[in-house]
Image 1: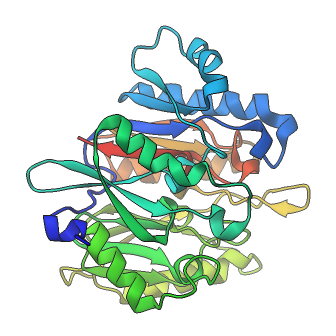
Image 2 (image 1 turned 180 degrees about the horizontal axis):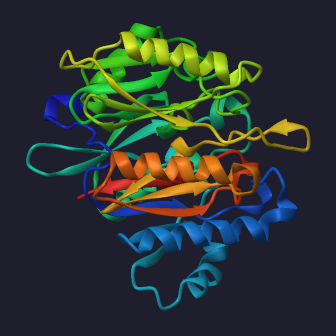
Image 3 (image 1 turned 30 degrees about the vertical axis):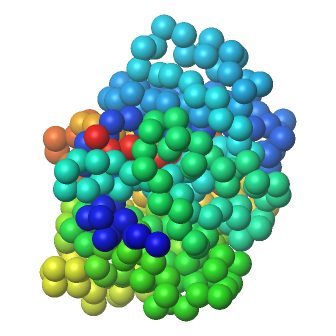
Length: 342
């Protein structure tokens, strides 16, 4: 077996230039709240249109929905539809992770997918989404022998990866692998040199603590962290622990990390379950950032989040979308998308 690292491939940071964004169209049968299908489709359409203001978008669509979805985006030359059968619409997690070598060749990692530890059957079609996308675009494919979701890690482009123990060490993913073995796979497939392990993700996150809800790199040596000021909120202890870890950490090049805090939105629930509201589930696009906002009592934290991101990225346009549109289904903008680098 030849690993991507041996061929000089590494994962670029999300802020590197994209060739396009990939996103899957929702499947009513797989939804937690199928009666809200039309509303969820509307929210996906809003996100797709927003992304298309900055770069091309390929929408992965079940063949039975192809003509309907094409008609919805008719006239927008930056949006194309690609027929690929899938069970669920979270392409960050069931799609390929793209890597690039020094010559500019782009390839894809095909992780094994088991629907977040076997939570949502069936997932057989989702496990084949990455190979079909890579075949369509003619990209070299590396099949990784471990269960992994793209929302469970971020990279800085200079050898450092950030993730959570709650997810990657969860026995419902790769129970046969040790922490050291998982790190070795990450090094060999993503071209990284160091893993920074946070302990937990957000309270109530059914992905078992995906890092893309709590922390991400803004640049090498710079991390954005969602924080909580209410000691009665379970996220307070989680954020404090993550803050300690990051303050004590160094990256792959030995740098101490600059930490940019973003205040979490106010607590909100649906049918008695906490919603995992997160501004960290934003998505980089060429020249911009797509930021989910939540409105209502979150209006002030919405404003502060946009302000903090604008200060961190003065050359990028902060484009907001309705973050309540899909959150009841368990994720947000970053969860739905996957970037293909140029």
